[in-house]
Amino acid sequence: MVVWMTLALAVTLHREARARLVLAPGGTAWLDAPGENGDLLLNCGDEGMTQFLTLPLLRSRGVDELPRLAISHPDTLHAGGAAALFEAFQPRRIALPEGRFRSPADRRLREEIQRRRLPAENLARGDRIGPWCVLHPAAEDQYRHADDQSLVLLGEFQGLRVLLC
Image 1: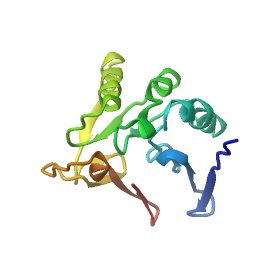
Image 2: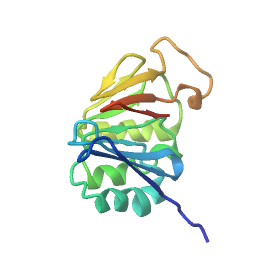
Image 3: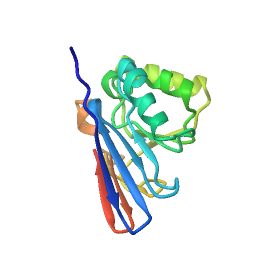
Image 4: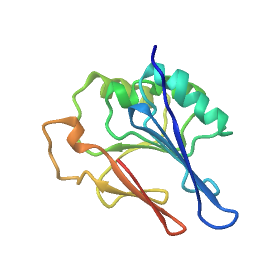
């Protein structure tokens, strides 16, 4: 029997403003910042995780639109469930790490994004996705392993810094 554990951390930023960071297996994280300016889903998980954890998690949080999706690195574990996610939510912006990936999962992800005509871009150090700043990878970096060029994001919400990697 596999037990999925989800850790929810609610941080009070001021008396009324709250940010909720929900972490799940497979590198999936949902940050629900005050308003929707900083809302971001980092990875969706593989196909099973997307169906049985990520989608129910988003729905349980009242998410009906997905402003931003960032894929740390496009492999099956982190992005294998993208087609199911895109069926339920059409992200307004998709961020992928700069660099070349040779995996079949990366090809499937990019084909699905193109087929659905979703707005996606490759991001490198210094780029931004909403209030999130990309720290890694640099545009000129070249790595032998896909894990080494994972997207690393830093966001700040009313004095609270959140690092997603």
